[in-house]
Length: 302
Image (tube, rainbow, N blue to C red):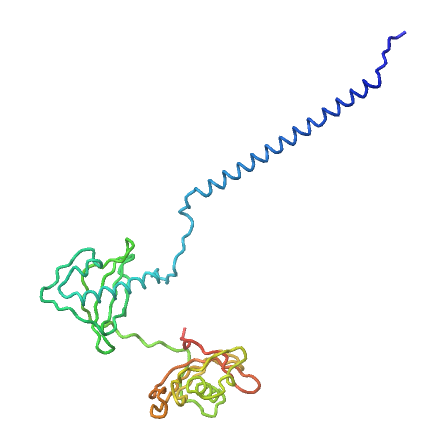
């Protein structure tokens, strides 16, 4: 007869309770391992962010630049060179025999004539011509005086090492060559006074410049213009007129010369007679022409 042993009920319960107590141990280990892994990932992410923050900026990244023309003339450099030349010529003329007044422009103190007289400037000083003499090297012509009475000085401005630096003393030069006439993309002629577009443009100028009432009446919806204040004339008349080709039948770009006449005796705010050039965009609506835009400049011939 086989030897058998009966396991008491309390023993069976004790065995099951031990198994139940052992099962959560594996779950806790998994949870602890997951938490450790999560902390490792957080630590690695933090180290990566710190490294990126400490890493110097790559020289291959493009740096902001100002616009350049096709010849590589940087607009900002032209402005700086022109302003520097104006200040330098002003200091040069006002220095007289005191060369130390030019040290900040030249980097040294020049020897000036002992009988040089300082010039008190009351007339405008302005750059009128800037030529590229080399890489970051400019020749600037500065005009001193009122129109028709100017004297011209040429200055060499070196900007290769950062701050502008004058090279030598200003040189007196002749006036720059007169500019060539710009070619407009419109033929100007005598306006037809009964042309509805001319009538609308004339009425608009009268309301816009001469203080006549009803400016909004001549404007397209959406265009907001305030009349000139104080007014600049007592009357406006279109004396030359041209319509730009290429617009459709309901939209026309016009360039005009207007005679702005003023009567100073009747109105102190008015001026004497002047001729001024305007360019307007006109739109046909409800059988009449309205000004839909006051353009900033006449169109040029391509």
